[in-house]
Length: 186
Length: 249
Image 1: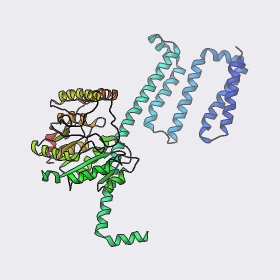
Image 2: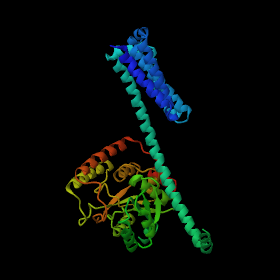
Image 3: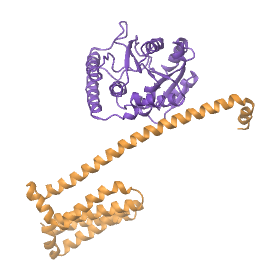
Image 4: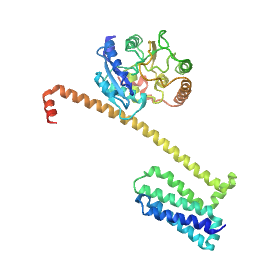
């Protein structure tokens, strides 16, 4: 396979997209930087045959490592900018760390492959999937709790509103003249 | 009778009922003059709120839609706050004739139970439903009677009257999915009592029932499931009948 086709072309596209995005809104700047770096690396691989020989047998690991690092970085950024609460970030960071561990230490996943008899990629998918399940479950728990709280808040608001109305009404009955005065002023 | 009625509050949960509500409020005034009415507006998009105020009712205006259970709970809370001894619930679609309120009150006075339910099944000339719905309701009443160890003939009836103990309990805990059947099973476990009385229901004056044909059978399955899950839950003993009585409520 021509290295320019398999690495150079996607690399060039990513570099281009990254550079274009970088000039756009600030919110996508992180994504743009990511695209630019990956594109640049891919083009480097296409240029140097030595790099290709190093990359090929470890493609999955490299890919995973890249994904987990990006994932961790984005999560941390979101926490740092107060867009994500720590307690919801914990599971996400856990997922990123486990993925990263698999990328640097292939023995663990090799063990999982041996035990389950799955392929390497399926084993990774299994791990990722279980974490996503955990996260989804966590979100449903939080959602149910919020629904309970929302019910209480709405009821309380309605009761307070009715009470204010009652108070205003009795006030008006007690002081009809004064009330007319304020209405006239308005 | 008159004494009980004077200590009662009528709670009407309403969602988009600007058409059915005004005649209902007029009718209530005719049959039960002096009975205070609270309409709980469950975030309607139409003029339910204004119509209810014009009809002389106190309005609890929920900011978001909570469903009938959340609306009723708001009503119970209001009733507890204002020290009412009894709360009567009546649907806003005109199904529950205000003339039946006297039957509920008389039955409450007679039996002294915590909850009186107006049952359309115990009344011969009541408006009857489609076959599929009757099968679904029939099955549910058998199942619910078994769970409650007490005969239930109309498990989905919302025409009810509760006393102050149950009102207090419901203000704090009220099942949110299928409040009528679920609350029956729940209150029996807490030592409360209930009794049914025949009341002639009418065809609703506005809107359509959410239950018809196949969906009423599906409803029966969902309620069965919810009831079984409720059985697996533990109940909060702090709200049992004996505890609330000991608190001097």
